[in-house]
Length: 125
Image (cartoon, rainbow, N blue to C red; front, side):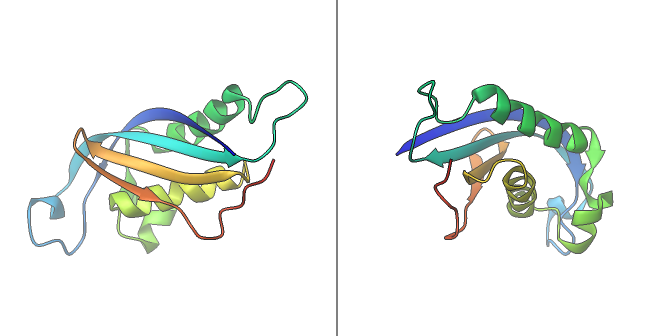
């Protein structure tokens, strides 16, 4: 089994609706994102998944979030714009591009993170 990861960052504003504290107000973060894939077999070149393919997919998703107010994006009109839901959003978007995505970790700051994964994550490719 092989586990690969790529990372990226984006800056965005959000507010956590209903939160009983400062996070209820509009504020921003420079989010760090790690996408991890798990793969059982290597391809004929001896690669699990091309890092460029992973990075390109992640960069495209992050470009759509960068310098946005997350609460105004369609997905976050249905889900509170917490780090947990940001992780779910990126996970789902990446799974649409690469089925072997195993998890997404989001950092709102240097010491706080959340990781999203499902029990149905498939070890494919």
